[in-house]
Amino acid sequence: MPKKKVLFFDQRPRTLPKQLFGRKEEIEKLLRALEAGSWVAILGPRMVGKTSLALAGANAFADETGYNVIHIDLRDTETFREATEKILGRLPKSILDTLSKYVSEISASAGGMGFSVKLKKTASARRALADGLFKLKDTVLILDEIQSINQGISHFLRALGSVFNENHSLLVIFTGSYSGIVRKLFESTYKDALFGRPPISIKLAPWKETVAEEFLKTGFEKLKVHYEEWEIRDAVNQLGTLPGWLNLYGVKRYIERDHETAMKTTIEEAVKEAEKELEHLLEGRSPKAKEVIRLLAFGASWSDMAQTGISEDALSRLLTILVDGLFIVEKDENTGVYYFTDPVYRKAAMKLPLVTKTKTAI
Ligand SMILES: Nc1ncnc2c1ncn2[C@@H]1O[C@H](COP(=O)(O)OP(=O)(O)OP(=O)(O)O)[C@@H](O)[C@H]1O
Ligand SMILES: [Mg+2]
Image 1 (cartoon, helix red, strand yellow):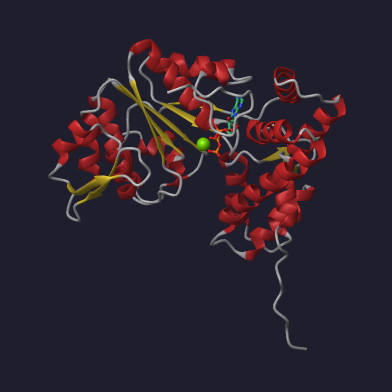
Image 2: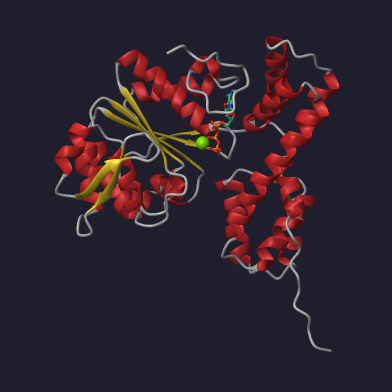
């Protein structure tokens, strides 16, 4: 098959180290960790390049060692059972055939990759997963977006723990944000259940502004797209420095050949995605949490946010997720003001519909 020419800007995740811009230190750390037999967790906000780093690192390692790479996207996979079925469905058929006591159904997967597997109702997902992964040799397994799993976490950690101890030729790269299961991977209370050592963590931050500008300029020069300096600054000001949004702007700019059109469509798409993330975060929380998010769009101190009437506990939990979990809010230590670091999230927060107060009878 003829190979597709890879453009400098590409909508899909990168798969090779040479396609990663500005991530030299991170890729080297990832490779050192894999070489040392460590499991790794790549943590960061959406669009920072987690999947790209995981794939590029795993492929480079596989190239050196002859290992296989299996990438499993667990976004929208909420239970450990579903996750197990997804993972088993991607194991080589020869391994899958040895797991028949756990499996009620195997069919060709609709997505084309691997198989669609159903566990027997009575089967233990923990045993099935551990059994399958014990047999998976010389492989880098990428469990992408692992924080989606919110049911059966302790079973998952226990299965992984026994696999870590028993199968030394399986390496796992987790990606996600520092919440839910990812946090537990590192917590000492889970240490015994899991491996004696938590995974090595690689925190992926948005680029520095200089790197972001360099990325766009390098791409435009390679693709012979004419640009003005102010357009580059405008893109970085309005889109921030997350690689994903800048890359999308690069794709659109390449296609459209017009800064304004490319900016407009990129911002629309980016803000829509960020709104979805915020809405997801707000699901099941009190309407006061939404008011807090809107205040953060303009910058707010703890007492400003407390005035919405949100409980201290709920406010503290919300801020922990925004600051440590999603890396989208920071606190200015001099003024005590919390704010969205990323302009796309700031715009999305401003667009959140205001809480409509129910009319009180006069
Ligand atoms: N270092 C990089 N150099 C160039 N492009 C990059 C880099 N990192 C990411 N990208 C591009 O940005 C986009 C998003 O990257 P990726 O999907 O890896 O991010 P992610 O953090 O996994 O995002 P998501 O939260 O959507 O899963 C992709 O189009 C990818 O090609
Ligand atoms: Mg990803």
